[in-house]
Length: 281
Image (cartoon, rainbow, N blue to C red; front, side, top):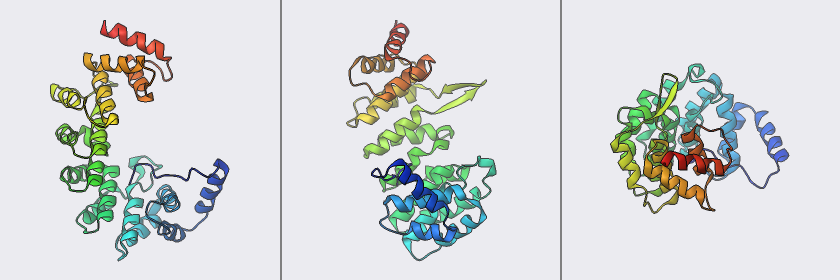
């Protein structure tokens, strides 16, 4: 399961909009039935899940709970996926069922079906309450890489007292995607002090980033460079500049330089290069 479920690339924008409108006209029961159609990773059932999440409310919650109790493992997985981001269009304070969604997800972590367990872990990752994060921390060594991916992805883990320890451990994971996401999450760990965002920093954190600079997975290497650069680490800034001076720089290189230099989005790359050179000098 990914953070953003795929949408069919063969449809035109108008066709996609009409398909979405057709789904939005369906009843809640019809939408839940649509989530069970086709294969697990097909686009259409995930589109139905998306509509249900945004529709939210007590009726969707009750039907999702019923699906979570189903004897059909796909139905349980779909119910959890809906609960993961129920009422997603509202602020957390206006989402009244979050504690119940967390409790239901924790119950399914102990299931024997792998897909249901993965969906439960991702639900906890999205829900991110104190109880959800505590449960995820206990899953950091889970044998399923997708469950560990869900742990690494949890935004609220970044500010947890054990967050740095958990993320630095996951940065050494055997699975490249887990390493990448753990590096990304630690790289973006920050706090707001006096209205100013400050990236979480320590010798331990910088050492963890340096250990990923020779990772076999390029995405993880790039995240490590960006994490160091955002902490104004000379090695990270130097490597970031080297990438931006090449012909194959990534948008993430540009974004990291803009963030570090406090410049607006879409700043010309040459201006970013000059700024990094001045910083190093």
